[in-house]
Length: 155
Image (tube, rainbow, N blue to C red; front, side):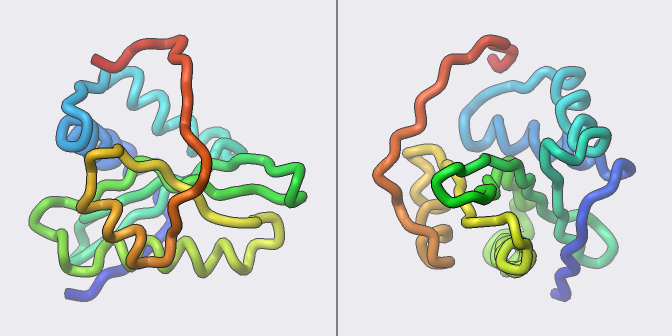
């Protein structure tokens, strides 16, 4: 299977929304509000300072996605690229789709003069994904991720 990686465009929003909904149910058993999600995905295309999506295509169809957002690091005088909203269609898993997505991001991140590293978070019980990330060279950090949710739109 030939995999083509490209930056997503606004016409991809319906697929990105669908994949995000599938990912939330599969990994966290959560239902995402479609209207909120559609606005959130679209926001990355109307405000590129928020981040961007890339997609993997096979045989003309989108089969995987990930989103990059930015975190400013004053200690490193650069931006971390956060990998989020990772999804690969079930029937396309174990075929190198995520590896291709990650390889593309790592390649452009290294060439980007402002990127000082790549980060991601993963559900603590998603051991399959963790093994994939470790295999690609990502390492566990000494940080915990904490949050306070002000929107509470996720069920």
